Image (cartoon, rainbow, N blue to C red; front, side):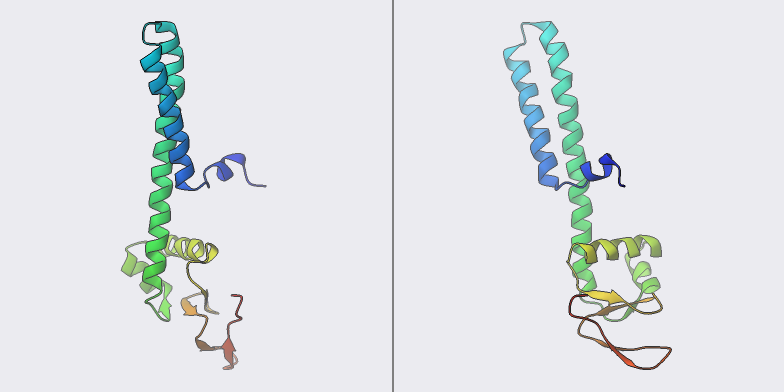
Length: 144
């Protein structure tokens, strides 16, 4: 069972920006309206400003991750039957990081395709692939 923090960090970036903006707005509200009461300012100010800044920072991180997956998917559409090692080398990442990006792109539906039988090549759905063991032509299912 996944932890509650993993589902909390999987929100869209716009949700984090909204939460952070909401908290910062109320921090500004406390600063402007309660500046003459130092106790409220010292208690309510950090309670709103610190989580607001953290939420915006997490939203920015999520937005960058999402953007990198979209850029990877658009680059991947131009590649045909590319080995994983070559793909990782062209991206300047390790093979493991490249496979994680590929899994995210496949999971979000940004690209349609499959990884080959020896788990070393990337194929698109419309390609016909020959099995290296039995030499039969394989057709990927439409749902892949």
